[in-house]
Image (cartoon, rainbow, N blue to C red):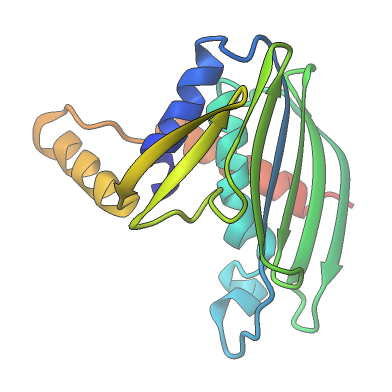
Length: 196
């Protein structure tokens, strides 16, 4: 998940881990866009199609990164719109993580383009600018931290990912998303997809 190598995402994890927001209370995310896709694997259930698996994974990775792996997750609601090919065009999900953090995520191929990433704690809030939440690539980005704007220079997180993975393979020193995090994200997405 290339976005986890973005310096701004690293900063979000750092702020939450350091307690700069107090105790984590809520994560609010959205990744939506209207698509005219035809003959695309994203429309085919047998190829892992659907909005949840395509763009919901970004949001589930945020949950896992910000809650020490989201070991205890309870789904509180799932609303979905299913398209003619059988994939979810929109999935709206609410969860409770570790019995204390609530999270809400919207993934969609059918709603107007919108990206949102807001993290609230007992002592503050951080948020990305609209449209910058998950796909900032080769462009500058910002983060609002308790009312103070932080700016991040142009970054290609794909390159950051490749360089870190290469360093891990070559010298054992690069940072990689743990296998446990990847497996946990997959389990969360499966649980949401199979929720009635």
